[in-house]
Length: 268
Length: 103
Image 1: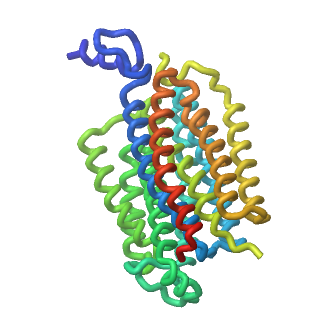
Image 2: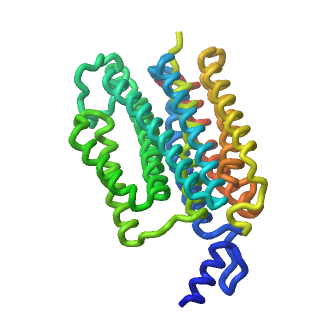
Image 3: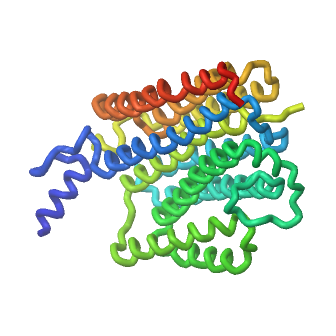
């Protein structure tokens, strides 16, 4: 048993052993993550093509993003780009075996990711209050209703906008939780649980942040099952694999930001 | 120990990539503010800039540049081929609808 563990460890770390050589010269977790990201890129590709198709084929495409929205989206982009830098620094720290700085850089990455989610949620709230909403969205009190007619005339815009950015925001949220599990392990569970309880009872049901609370609830359950049934200490490989996921989230935004925001500007 | 990294891991290169990504983002925002291009041309320019940015992210931040050539090419070619197929299905049709004047 001990031999098997040692040989398994040798394969995991790319050392010569009795078992098969690492696939493509990389350990299996990394190859698995790359394959997942390749398939996920096609999901986002389809959504981006659907958005671009509608954008090109419809001359009466709405342009609801003024200077304030573009500035907000630019700050969101800077947050994600900076989070990728802190993630890389976290991966480097984990390769050095520096656990404290690995955790610190991962927490910094989570902070940038959270800032992105908050800014994006505020943008969504503003648009929904202005009437640019999907039929299932709850009514926001006190909105101007400025874009209600636009949403009715070109329903493809809210459908593709909320579909695409909502899918991306879901990925960012899952990424922040993933990094929280890798950085803090079981200590992340009470933090996530506290956020979920506070958010569930204090955030009004019409707020877009209330939708996110349900995501946190599901993520809490999954993290609970993973960490309680199979507790483990995450190593440099796990940090690198989580980094691949995080950079992918950043990568997708590099297409969403220009195609969705910069192609629908109203700058006078 | 080839799996995590066998390349130059100096922090400086990552700061350069981060800076380049911020500069390219600033160029995109400036183009949007100027609004000198028609939507189709603007879309093409923004897509080119996005591809450059994504190459920087995939190559350096995701370390694909430092992976084995087989893995690098297999991933890039397979995903790119899927997008090329999607492109030839979607864009000519979107442009055709525009030319037909369908509102």
